Structure formats: C-alpha cells, structure tokens
Length: 351
Image (tube, rainbow, N blue to C red; front, side, top):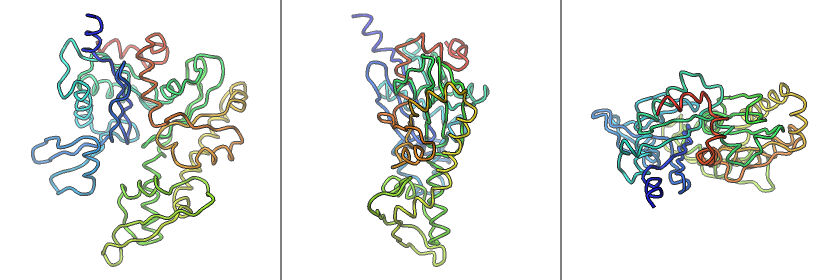
C-alpha cells in the first residue's frame, strides 16, 4: 500500500516535446496531455497568459502587447525561458495545478531530434530540470517512435522509420538498439503549411494565415490524387484591394502547392537507403518502412513513398502519439532505456 501511494505521489513522465505539439505520458495512467506547443505572453508584464490550445486559438488575433510564440523551432529549443515555463505548466497539470515537491519530482524520458548537438541536448535537459524533473533521460525521436510502434529494434534486422513532425522529418534505420543511418530535414508539417500560404499569395493574390493553411491541409490536403475532387473555402486578405476575400481551393491545387516539399522528403529517404548497409536494405525491402508523426497523417503520403521506392510502406497505429508511447514504454524498461538513451550520463547527472 505504501509503495502504491509512493508511486502515485511520484509520477514518472514521458514527454514528446514537439515543434507543433507537446504530449505527456504518465506512468500507469497513459497520455494525459496533448496540447499545441504555443505560449501567449503579455510583453508589458512578462506574464504567461495561456499555454497550449488556448494560446493557439489566440494566434494572429492578439493586440500588440500580447505575443503568441512557439518556443521550439525545428524540434530545438529556441526560447529557453518560454520553453521552461511551458514545460512547468504541463508538469503542474499532472500534479493537478501544483508544483511537484522535492521528494515527488518526476523522472522524465523525453524525445529529441536526431543529429542534435550536445549543447542543444543540455538545453533540453536544463529546461526539463528547471521545470521540475529530478532526472532527465533523452532519446532520439525515431528510436522512441520505433519503440512506441513495437518494432523489433533489439533484433539484428533493419527497421526503417520516418518520423514526420511539425518542424522536422527524421529518417532512421535501426538495428540492434542503435541507429545505423540517419537524416534530419527541416521539411515537415509546418513547411507544408507555408507552401500553401505561398501558393495562395502567388496564384490568388491572397494573404493567408498559417492556421487557415493548416486547416486546408488537414481538410483536403493529400499527396496523391483521389477518386473525387475536394474543395474548401480559403479566406484571407486580397493583396490588391486590401479587402477580405474568399476563394475556393481544391485538392489538386493543394497538392501542387506541397509537391516540391513532398518530393524532397522522398528524395531524402532515397539518400538514406543509398548509404545503408546492403543486408539492412534487404530487410527493409522485405519488411517495408514505417511512417509516424503527425505529418504522416497527410492522406496518400504512404502511397506516394511506396510508388517512389517500390517497397511496402505502412502507417503506425496512431502516428501522432508514437514517440510519447515509446517514452512510456522506456519508463517501464530501464535496461532498454540505458541502451538507447543519448548521452546516458546526462540522466544520471541530473539526479
């Protein structure tokens, strides 16, 4: 009974700190937080006004003294102070609005982009520690996503995974609990939104907000053509008259806007396959590759990649939560955590 109370009091956490969304997994309870990585700040008082969905709803609608900001760019912390406050807010939600005490400070497993520098890793560690963690373990996002998708990462076989988030697309081939070949490109969900904004400006002389572009991408965006044409109203400011205007855009036009970025993702996957050892390539050709991350939800993306590579492509179960589910599994398997953690000494040093 005492042990159960202690475990309930000190709750271990897995965090997917993403450019677009932050998800928090609590050991024994599952995913309890899934919120946009957005913070609203009053610049006059330096007060945090809102975090998560409430802050995202303010994007583009605030007076001059209130700014809405994303503290991460390309999966890397770009505003340390805001990132720390955002993390503290989410951790406090786990403790029902209270700050964890000295004895109840949680152990945290958190995902990070591949090819991240040691300085950037320490920035993540410091932000999570200052936000209330007693111990921080950092795992590369493709590895966490592979574990969350139950790929056999410990076996001597090639497991290829593409984690498409908001700021980056992470491509990795995993075998024997390690990443053998890897590549990270800054073309992912946010870049596809910007593609749609630029297309609206170039083709329709319409100034479009990024939130509206994201809605268009979600509603009718696709990587390959479907059987029927889909349309959606695109609303913005006419660049010639300066007045509000609505234009109907269809799925073919949205594909045209995004196709260059989608081809870059496909070409990057090809680049990794070209430098992957042939035995692992043979495994990938037989077993296929896995798509995870919120960007993988773009309709037809798996078909586009499969046609280009001529190998099977499948979507992870609930791709948006694959990374945070992987951190949750690692909380229960400390031996595997020590195997896959990046600079394991960081976790030990933060105790």
